[in-house]
Amino acid sequence: MQISTLPFLRKLALVVAVLLLVGCGSSSSHPFAMAEEQQPQTTEKPASGDAAEQPAAKAAEHPFRVKIPAPEFPKDMEWMNTKGPLELKDLRGKFVLLDFWTYCCINCIHILPELKKLEQEFPNQLVVIGVHSAKFDTEKEAQNIGEAILRYEIEHPVVNDDQMKIWNSFSVNSWPTMYLIDPEGNVVYLRRGEFKADDIRQVLNDAMAYYRENGSLDEKPIQFDLLAYSQDPTPLRFPGKILADEKSNRLFISDSNHNRIVITSLDGELQEVIGNGEIGSADGSYEEAQFDHPQGVALVQDTLYVADTENHLLRKIDLKEKKVTTIAGIGEQARNNWPGVSENATVSSLPDRFIGTPKTTAINSPWALWPRGDSLYIAMAGPHQIWKMKLDESEIGPYAGNGREDIVDGPLLPPVPYQQGFASFAQPSGLTSDGNSLFVADSEGSSIRAVPFDPEGSVRTVIGTSHLQYGRLFTFGDVDGPPKTAKLQHALGVCYVDGIIYTADTYNNKIKAVDAATGDVTTLVGIGEPGIADDPAQFDEPAGISHANGKLYIADTNNHMIRVFDLETKKLSTLQIQGLKTMPVKKRPAAAENATQK
Image (cartoon, rainbow, N blue to C red):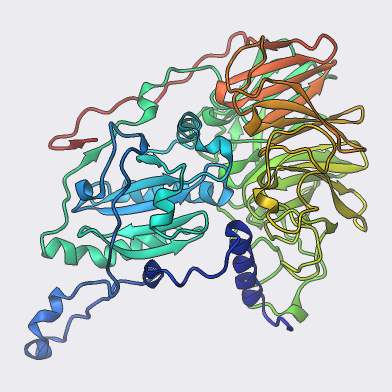
């Protein structure tokens, strides 16, 4: 079938993405589907002369055509960010937004800031509940979900739906999915995939008056007992990525949840702190600069490049002048991941190259960086692609990946967006290189991929699921051995040294050695159980890894630490950063007058 317009291509790609995630067809057979994206019915006010002709009952008409009683939550579920279990009947009178999510999912991560906007705008009318329905085995553990709540700074209750009971009762089949329940306890709106706060704000504003008028809207404030209120301050907070530079004897640490970059010597002596710790995108001096949960960094001479992930920006730091500058992105998540392509483009009008000017091109969750020659390669987690930017900041655009979330080998980049027969990635989150290929931690497929620097080459899988006919995004584990049987679980970090791709096997809490030539996998360090000990070695979801002077430097994310593994002695230690001060943690607010405490 000939595809004539890009909007059709996008719709087709979204359908394919959902099918890959859930492994099934249309969900329109379940009754809740009738509420999908229905808009509230609005009653236009009659002209003054026609008031007598307006039926009296019209003003009281329910704003939603479809109203389906919401099923109650099962008993004995684990709840977090609240004092105890919640029941929907206890929230009667509020709009309740159920967010079905899993904490590995980039699409789920994207809507968390949108939920926060809604919570801030409708604090007394709306309650958001995160229904965490895990994809990976590790994500079923309440402790790990709690760490994710803290890492993503979630301020609403979350229920651990580890057995998919709530998921099944609401007939969910993809992440993220959102249901809106009205103050009368009815499901009135369903939204699949990512959305913006504006989309839900309009629904709430259009419907609010009806519930106020009939007395069913309870606008009494609710305060929840958040996990953040019980946390102790730490020098680092969820460090995401790390870069060890042997030549200059420096470590560059993405202190992600402190929204800053920390520079130390390789033995831990503090040298610089870049960023004032406030979430923002301000350029300027180290004290003025702001970031939003930065991840990967790359060093080119005296310039440090930063993937400013949640700002959807690339920044560069002049280490001599001590100045931060924005070089790519517009500060908003890209909705079109193919630069140079307009909404109404036809296949015949597509450009020869998908490139744009960095400062005017929106980007989407840059997660890791790697410099080579005159270019900077970017693991762009949001669109499931590898991007490339010229270091002279003249152009930026996708280098590999057709934009479909999958683990598929093949030529680098299609001439038509989302075209099959080309390489697909699934949330690339780590980069390293042997000089000939770029090695990618392709996290959602628990795979390590090799991307050639030769644009005529093809992507191959070093270890992972590309050889499977189906289930490529749902095959994972903790198995050493040859590539056809070995398994990783949501690996986020990679570091190439002398033929070995050292891998932060994040959800297995291990560091593994992957032979770059054969794909053979061996556990290097870590017993698998989350913990903080040096002996026996334990980690807690390590996400970053780098090498210098025969040692691996590891961002042990959930432990808020940097660990050091000596490749010769096989000993693990914890780096002590001398002089790095802690930052304030979130404090419990004073009880609001008449507020319900939950």
